[in-house]
Amino acid sequence: MKTETQKPELSIIITSYKNPAVLRLCLESLKKNVLCENYDILVVDSATEEATEIMMRENFPEIAFFPHSKNLGFARLANEGLEKSTGDYILILNADIVIEKKSVDLLMEFLKKNPDVGLVGPKLLNFDGSIQPSRFRFYTPLVILYRRTPIGKLKFAQKKIQRFLYEDKDLEKPFEADWLMGSALMATRRSLEKIGLMEENFGFMYFEDVDWCRRFWESGLKVVYYPLVQMYHYHGKGSASAGVVKSVLFNKYTREHLKSGLKYFWKYLGKPNPHKE
Image (cartoon, one colour):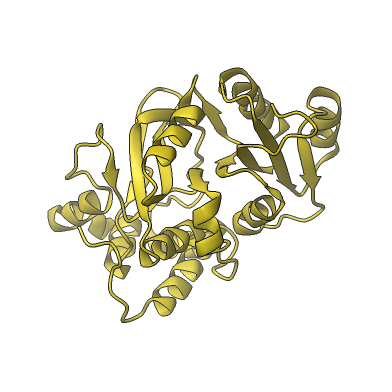
């Protein structure tokens, strides 16, 4: 990691919420597997519990820790990290990410070689080794309907969902994607100065990554899925459900997703897709 007087080449922002054991795994994987010698880590934590504060103070005193008494939501955590970071390259990670050797360094190397790329994201794997969808085409209202109702089991809807997930692409090769899951994203300081922070008005935890990627495209910067690098992601499916009516009534994550989606579609109503394939 960087010395006291060095400006970091890379800043790693960890967004965390009520799981010190998972956060510990994330931080230990970073300290073990990031080869760049000039980097710093910032942990921005929501609804901070005593166990997390004790762990950070006793086990990771060299890491900048920003606790909060309330649950702020993903965008506000990420934005605080972005505002406090100083590195030329910025990696945003959820605390439930575990990296492999050199994975962070390879993402940074890719951005250095491709100045027209504003955002890059790795292949994400479940802990059983299966691939986790993390690259998507922009949402349409029908795609949300298909994914959240039994209609999605019909053949025509399945084709639309598969296209949304880029399953028409070779997922082992890098390609430009409409948007990438916010769980693991790397950007350059130069591009962030052009794009700005994440939008915080969509709601608690959804669509800010979709919107952010769209703004990169609108500014002429590419968003690239880079599966030559992989990371592990413990991704809970809090908004999954058997039916949309039951889910809206009883699942707060689905309600948040739908509310955020309405705000997103209203913002971009009538605007063309900025990413021309």
